Amino acid sequence: MTTPEQSQQERALETGAVYQDAEGRRTTDPGAGATHADDEADRNAELLRRGEVGPRVPEE
Image (cartoon, rainbow, N blue to C red; front, top):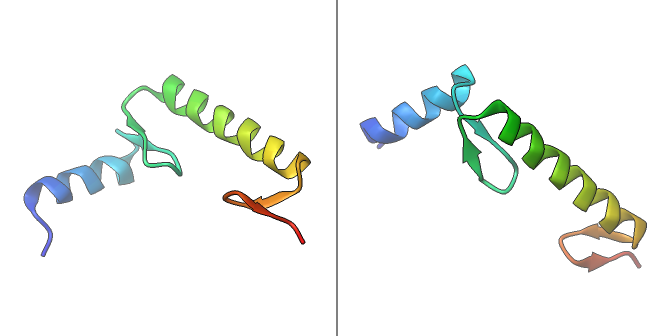
């Protein structure tokens, strides 16, 4: 069962009042949300350059 607090948090995500990245970081600042996304994209690109295809899983 969903608590009222969980429902409120989900509504905030759905309406764009809160931003959440793939690592679960949440912010109400769209600039910080964009910065988190950019940092994550840079990190993922570096992992791909090194041949890692998943979370610390080297490509065979």
